[in-house]
Image 1 (tube, rainbow, N blue to C red):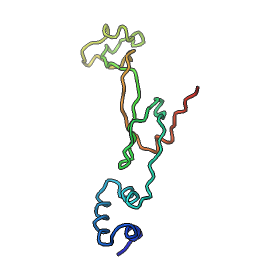
Image 2: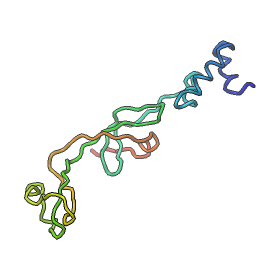
Image 3: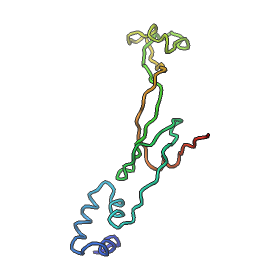
Image 4: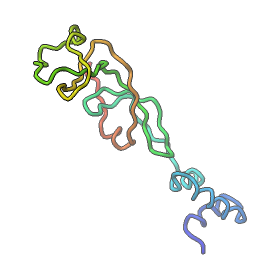
Length: 140
């Protein structure tokens, strides 16, 4: 049985290769994309260089069209996880003095993250729709 897709492919490729092409299309992670590429109707997404995701200023790294995955990076302050006594006033703990409060884990401790002044580059992924819907507008 001929489908619209096989008829369309038949206008570009020899009739005897259509079944093989459809088999390959069906075996890709994104059959619709594969078919669009073969038919010459696929248009690359134009993605902005920056987006704001979860309050973070993110920079575009790459886009995987087969999985619709945007790879990005952002900078954040490093964090250190420590354990402190349960009755400790954590408001006095800073990046400068946290080592003085850090104790071994036990039933009488609680954990917390201390934000450090050093930064690190973090990588993340999202889908194209979320990236497009959250552009970062740089105000000059």
